[in-house]
Length: 249
Image 1 (cartoon, rainbow, N blue to C red):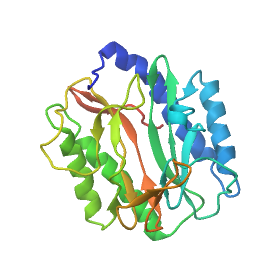
Image 2 (spheres, rainbow, N blue to C red):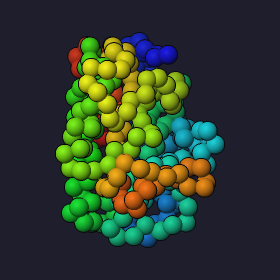
Image 3 (cartoon, helix red, strand yellow):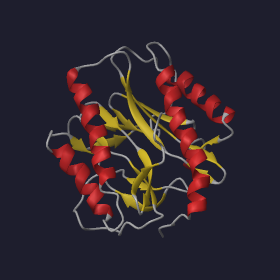
Image 4 (tube, rainbow, N blue to C red):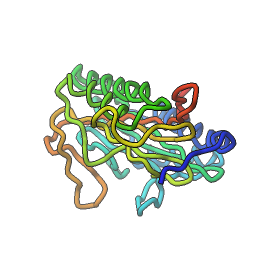
């Protein structure tokens, strides 16, 4: 069931969304060569707690950390550990904050220092695909219009689109209806109406669609061994067009 939010609820949600977005700013400031992903996760945890919220992901379905920190060929759900970041790594940070009864959710893929032009283009076009999807998030369209816009943008570069994991509604629960795939047919799927809040999150592999989940049950890698990118915003469907709730300053 799709849960529509009132104007009052949207206003309340904004604190969780703001903290979630600001947590990515902390990630950007903290990521550097030599830091461990566990140390990065601790910095994010401390910030969320200081901000008067709780980490949405910590304990969610048993996940053991504040953020999913996914390096290079890890697409999503990377568990922070003692791995030290190296110059040239690309690092996806997916994180959310829970506050006043609502969740925020967003992700960004960062570069440690500098990386190859091939990797930078992957990141650039994956982020561009996110905004192509957001452009279609208007009253009267369907979820498939978002999905198709993302797929259409990504497919022109020959990248792989992850199909096993998708975007989703977000609100009082971290994962609500509807599912928001990064591929699909325009004009299909649930109708977009005012008050819907959804997380749109392209997950894109440099090579091939396929992914594999590691024995820990969380860490999800590209089957090809290529690098991957992940960008995500939570948005609201309004009569004045899509509003990005997790916009970073």
